Length: 449
Image (tube, rainbow, N blue to C red; front, side):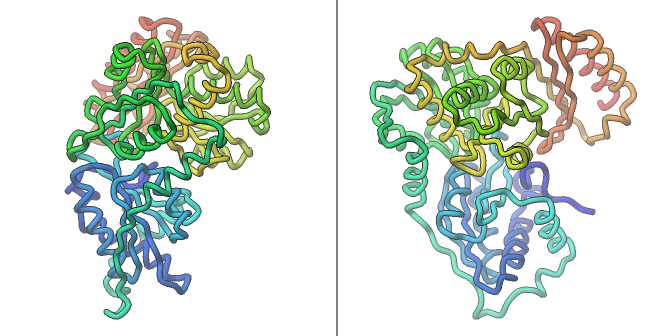
């Protein structure tokens, strides 16, 4: 069967299948047809990040929705978690985000949220795919008088800011804190500075001038080095780096040290346990989480629940085990008491709240975990051959595992959104860890090159 959806919606190079205007139009039609079964006129939110191709895909999606008899609410550039919130807040039937998250500007993607603010499950995705590939959408279009309309909602950012502010107690503000914000020239470029100014922080901004082509380019959570230098230069208290669609956060402490998701999760887990807000004394992490996080949880008496990579799978495990905290080292962290998806700005607010309440600087809070050296290499592949079919690479993986022994681990998997083989290792030293990765990389290049 043909597939459109990957682990995080639909993604690809703009103007090439599947990220074409034709596909976007059909997605809009299929989604609307499914929602119409409830016997009412569907209302669907469309938001996007700052990519150049967002304009054409937005127009195509809106055309598809209207042609099938649904109404469209356009909110413009807005973080992915903001669309999730607005979908529920405006009582819409669904929300669509046009974004490829942390990918370069040439890529784009489509993510769909239900009216509860959660991403579609596998069955819902398959239903949309079936409608598209059966080729019957044209015959399902309604008569002219039932065609939908498109509206623009100018107050969406204001609604989202109020929602974000209410995730903290009323008495908390950021007065006296100097914060450097790196918005990756992406979807947070407007909302993050507005919010932190409103909360009385002294802010310095980086990468808040999107031009359609500079999203994620040497900026944001994927490239926090510039932010690290700026922290020292500005003598700031903390740096906050978001990714292109605003669902991730990477922090930088007052000394310029980069603090990734695993460390942030450890900080939150300890604070929440100490304050009695970590339900079931558990948190969900993924197979990519650092060994150091596992050892930190053991010392803290916190149960670590492991999920596959991907925020949807993290949320599923959180719901299954009634956990209120979960996330990934990429900085995608979910606080289920506040939102149904990862939100970089909520994560930033919760971190600043812990700093305020404990009186500790981020560099001190980060000592809760000893992060093991981790090396990740990506190998571009033409085809994702099942790993168990790769004999040479399989032998190399076992060799690397034996080389590290009990001092580390190896994880090899394909990216869910790109044609990449991800080779990751953790070990006692950078030298040993790099060597373990090189063993596998060399074999994989030979076998798949």
